[in-house]
Length: 445
Image 1 (cartoon, rainbow, N blue to C red):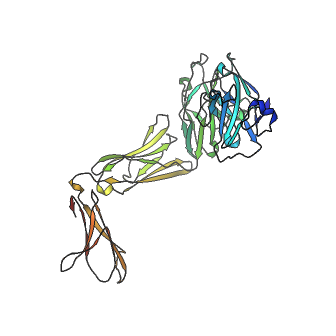
Image 2: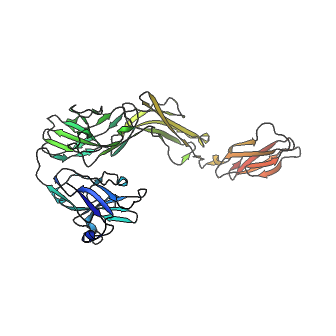
Image 3: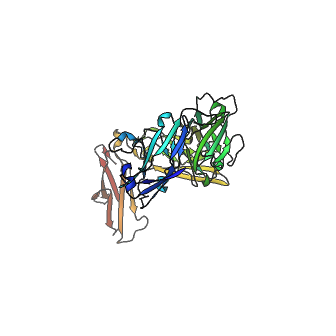
């Protein structure tokens, strides 16, 4: 049975009957669950006045009573993560007024009444009229949906036209699980309520359902549920739940849905270099790219060395990264050098490429070689210059500490100091020869 429950801003239950409703919520009045299982609370709300959907909307659950101002212990969950006494998960989108909540791994101590609250800027609304009653029983029926613990990324990205490997393992010590019997793996999309909507089941390793052409490449008997999603498209973007079926053992990983996001464009690779680069230092430069499908990794190229061979490595969370590394000894010529790295992903019908670049900053080492060196001069505009035109001469040099620049014009009477500074500008009147000198406390050039 569903009940419309009224919310009133900052008003307790005693006054709910006497005030107009500011918010209504649609949720069950009473729900029964079994110890060791998970519980999904369908929940939505509507407001009589608009709320600011562009602002942060926070969902709060309170247990036993709603007098949180006098007893903060009644708050068991706040979606801002300021309170998380119970490991709940609001799976609904509060911006869309969906407050559906997942209660994982229940035990009998969860039996109580619960109140839901919304906070959105100055707006505060608590479901004071009617609490939600949850009753948790300790006995287990043969087909109870037991909670099992799943190890898999919470979020993972994929690329349209490519494949995606989901690292996945599960753990249960329940006596009903028997690895000697056939173990089936089931994937559900968007919801775990397959008893109400069988269309949420997209794959069953028993081959009874194969709406999506997934492949269970892990050994379920060894509690390895690693799954391959081939040839994804953007319609695959959603949350997914994994379920194990083994004789009378039925377990859904309700506490940890997997969010898959499928993008049309690949993520740019990253370039990693050590900090504080210095001349004569030997360093390793790494270009790496996220690899959603190790069976079809991206091809990496770097302008430092075109024929580098990429290596695909497994990360600690079971996902993969493809890398190329270059070892170089830095010199002054590497200062200001642009490193480019690109990743080309094979997809159906061709490939997709993403790139990134980084500019190196190489410092001089603190030896006598910090005297000015590689001093050079340039002229703007270059080429022939007509009389009366404005001309700028620029001087540069590498030195530490930074050098002082002086410009000289060569004449038959001796070199004439015409300017101090890296740039000398003047109106050109007649032909002449100029040079610059860079000087610091360690020398000049």
